Length: 306
Image (cartoon, rainbow, N blue to C red):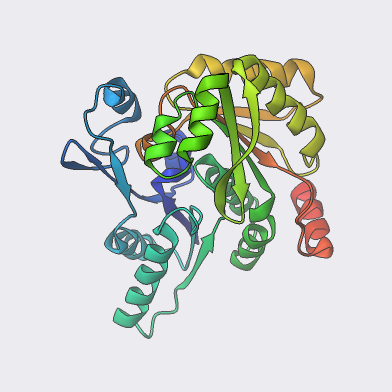
């Protein structure tokens, strides 16, 4: 049996996590001097309700290797023989390094163990890694082998397209994701920055005026970039305003030919610490960045035939 584990920034719903038995290592958030586990000690809605009134900006830290180690040991007790860990980008967090350390620690303690463990640096943030994790869980249910799941992740991880727009630039400034100069221009011109991933790190790729411009940008880019053979679901993320996510879903349904599943999910506390209130994101598989055309074609055929 194959166990899937991840860190809490994947921001998948509790229903999905339970359905596919995904092990989650929580990031830690420091709020008013108190250390909290993402989505365990504090839930997203409770966090967003107080975020605007906090005197000190909350901070985050990577999962402790011991959290990953607990998942590994419990997975073995459940009878799993292979573990695939999919982490947020190493360019934005130490989560990947923490998982690798947990793997090394496990084999130091159990040198004769036959368990297989592979850690993926997803090059993604938030529900970008969540997209990979959910797709991996679906493929596992279709009978894909451990090696096939590894190849899928390592092949497609750079194809997960991210779009993220924030309503309040202050959180990105404080977390070092945006320069003061860019923020000043954004405030003056009332421009909303749209971010994506470049080489495993967040980068501003566009600027739009107002929410209408942002949603139009998302739909236009999706139409041009989407890999129609592989994107069988889209994830739309939000922090505090679900209605924005619903507006984007309606635009995708009404203005594109996409007929697959669209899943709306709330971003968690760790991600919300950096992007703030009113953020909206979208994730799908884009064309390009393909490492091995033959492997891609093989996966597409397997997905269709299973």
